[in-house]
Amino acid sequence: MTYLPEETGDEETGEERADAVLNGLTRLGEVPVSAHVGVFEEVFAGLEGVLASADDTADRQR
Image (cartoon, rainbow, N blue to C red; front, side, top):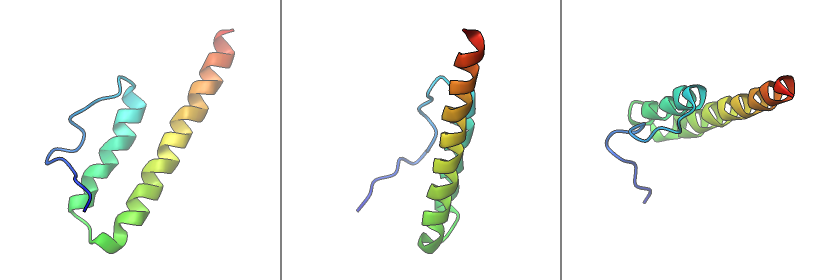
Protein backbone atom coordinates (compact mmCIF):
# COMPACT_ATOMS: atom_id res chain seq x y z
CA MET A 1 0.00 0.00 0.00
CA THR A 2 1.23 3.50 -0.81
CA TYR A 3 1.42 6.02 2.01
CA LEU A 4 0.20 9.54 1.27
CA PRO A 5 0.54 12.17 3.98
CA GLU A 6 -2.65 13.68 5.35
CA GLU A 7 -1.66 17.08 4.04
CA THR A 8 -0.15 16.66 0.60
CA GLY A 9 1.80 19.77 -0.32
CA ASP A 10 3.25 20.44 3.15
CA GLU A 11 6.75 20.22 1.71
CA GLU A 12 7.60 22.89 -0.80
CA THR A 13 10.25 22.76 -3.49
CA GLY A 14 11.12 26.45 -3.32
CA GLU A 15 9.93 26.87 -6.91
CA GLU A 16 6.45 28.43 -6.89
CA ARG A 17 5.46 27.03 -10.29
CA ALA A 18 6.47 23.49 -9.31
CA ASP A 19 4.68 23.81 -5.97
CA ALA A 20 1.50 24.96 -7.73
CA VAL A 21 1.63 21.94 -10.04
CA LEU A 22 2.34 19.54 -7.19
CA ASN A 23 -0.70 20.86 -5.33
CA GLY A 24 -2.70 18.99 -7.98
CA LEU A 25 -1.88 15.84 -6.02
CA THR A 26 -4.27 17.00 -3.28
CA ARG A 27 -7.09 15.93 -5.64
CA LEU A 28 -6.15 12.28 -5.12
CA GLY A 29 -8.30 12.08 -2.00
CA GLU A 30 -11.29 13.50 -3.87
CA VAL A 31 -11.33 11.24 -6.91
CA PRO A 32 -11.80 7.49 -7.24
CA VAL A 33 -8.67 5.35 -7.51
CA SER A 34 -9.50 4.70 -11.15
CA ALA A 35 -8.89 8.43 -11.82
CA HIS A 36 -5.53 8.60 -10.04
CA VAL A 37 -3.53 7.80 -13.18
CA GLY A 38 -5.07 10.85 -14.87
CA VAL A 39 -4.13 13.07 -11.94
CA PHE A 40 -0.56 11.75 -11.96
CA GLU A 41 -0.31 12.32 -15.71
CA GLU A 42 -1.53 15.92 -15.37
CA VAL A 43 0.96 16.64 -12.58
CA PHE A 44 3.80 14.99 -14.51
CA ALA A 45 2.99 17.03 -17.63
CA GLY A 46 2.86 20.19 -15.54
CA LEU A 47 6.26 19.45 -14.00
CA GLU A 48 7.71 18.82 -17.45
CA GLY A 49 6.41 22.24 -18.48
CA VAL A 50 8.00 23.89 -15.47
CA LEU A 51 11.32 22.21 -16.21
CA ALA A 52 11.18 23.19 -19.88
CA SER A 53 10.48 26.81 -19.00
CA ALA A 54 13.38 26.79 -16.52
CA ASP A 55 15.69 25.81 -19.36
CA ASP A 56 14.31 28.67 -21.46
CA THR A 57 14.87 31.15 -18.63
CA ALA A 58 18.44 29.96 -18.08
CA ASP A 59 19.20 30.35 -21.79
CA ARG A 60 17.88 33.92 -21.80
CA GLN A 61 20.05 34.89 -18.81
CA ARG A 62 23.27 33.95 -20.60
